[in-house]
Amino acid sequence: MKKLLLTFVLLFALATVTAQEVAKDSTKLWTRKGNISLLFNQSSYSKEWLGGGTSNIAGNFGLNYDFNYKKDDVVWDNKFILAYGLSKIKGDALTAKTDDRIELNSLWGKKASGNWYYSAYFNFKSQMDTGLDKNGVRISHFFSPAYFQMGPGMLWKKNDNLSINFAPAAAKAIFVDSHFTNLGSSFGVLQGDSSRFEFGASISAYYKFNLMTNVSIENRLNLYSNYLDAPQNVDVDYQMNVVMKINKYLSANVALQAIYDDNAVQAIQLKELFGIGVNYGF
Image 1 (cartoon, rainbow, N blue to C red):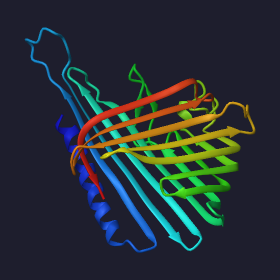
Image 2: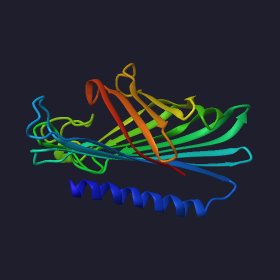
Image 3: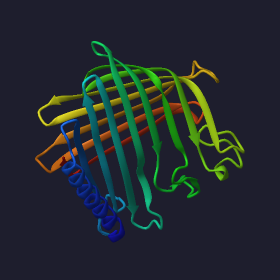
């Protein structure tokens, strides 16, 4: 438990210091804003408790940081997401990972007409820590898998909270350590390979709004169709982040992610996180 608490305290302190240093270097051309959250959940039962239950503690750290550039007819929007979570159940030898994500989105645009821009985008997604299945077998680790997407297109941007990017010629690459594909495919990479290349079309949408006072909802959607293999099977990645502020530093957060990628698994992958804790905006 002490190790778990120390890990999240150090992550929170490091992110706070980094945010403050970056803010000192800000210019009028750049708009920077971000949010750091540190959420804890804990259940404890005495041995006399007759209703049943197992004591446990869980913590989740999240960093959501935007740094956007705008000058004349050029815009360049960047979003960095870092998330990590651990859970410890009393009596279990292992600490379970509840969240683990590194993501960078970069979108450059040059005005064409009205709200339309010629654009180019880049997306990177991976993880930091080892992932285990229900039997304790390692199925993933740092940079395995790692996803890259990039390509030119057209961007429709109404404002910083609403935009859609169309990329009809987008490349996608998936990397995974070869020892995960020794016995079969892994994350869409075929048996015996360590990477998979795709070429197709991408649509990315972003929409953020305030549902009511102190309640904001951020939505991100990415659709990808691979021209080279079953283009009718569209990959879907939808993410929603809800922040409900209690006061300046306390909030309740809900994070939902739904993924469909038939090359990895022919089912919808769902992840939902909810917690109450420290929330710091900068």
